[in-house]
Image 1 (tube, helix red, strand yellow):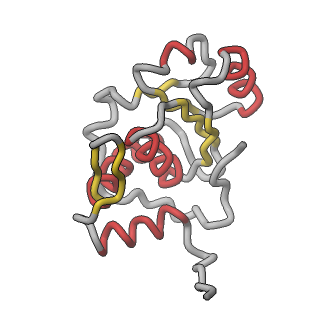
Image 2: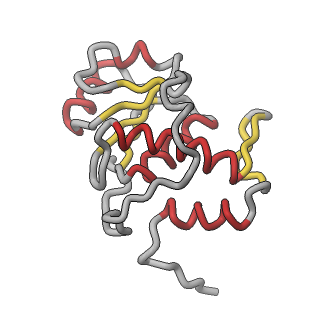
Length: 157
């Protein structure tokens, strides 16, 4: 059976609709840690608002160098909500490969966590620690990026 997919809708827009419809439903489960749709949406919104203040806009690239887990999901969703396209950097890559990928993709910022900050030493762009308090006081409301459409960049590999 084929299902219709709303091609004009953004990925994060579809997620926001689900979060509004079922905010208490489980969205992510990783090693005993859980986030509901509502919780994930609020965390991603806070980070997205912070990313917007850092200059992220439609088609900006934002690298993400984190271990698999809740931070990864929050980070990816936040990048999309801010209008950016994510550039995944596997923390298992050698340092020279990560440095090359950062230089080649020229992201506006890099999302990291305590365990991966050392891999990004010397990065020429802002490095945002997902464990920091910097973005925790941002708005929990869905960011409004009226110029963002489903035709904009979502990721770069």
